[in-house]
Length: 130
Image (cartoon, rainbow, N blue to C red; front, side, top):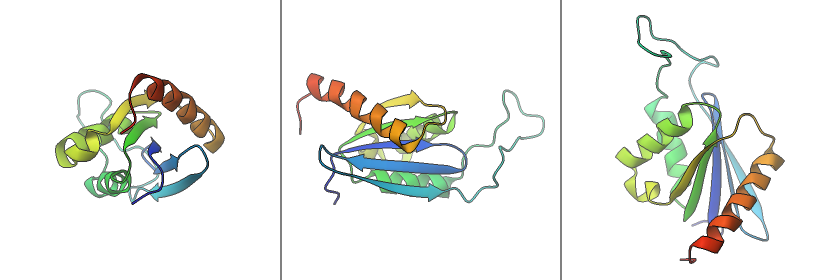
């Protein structure tokens, strides 16, 4: 079990960065997708035509998030919503701990942590700690 209560994940098609933290400390975990490094397109598809992320990749990220009580999901594209959909379908207990899904383009690690700390301060003022 993690010593940290909060987690933020930044995810795209190539990797996920999970930062867990409390007031005193933080840790980072990196998860690489096993997919090719470019965005895939389906021939003859309607819409953007992006292939959905691999089940194994999303499962690995979901498993890593299962230890946290409050989670923010961030990222630049559709993968963040695919992760949320995956959690809702395959990891509903973890999905209950997701407090938001936000767009963040390509921030630095420090920018991700600053965003998380700011968002969780607001959330913590509105909801009682469990």
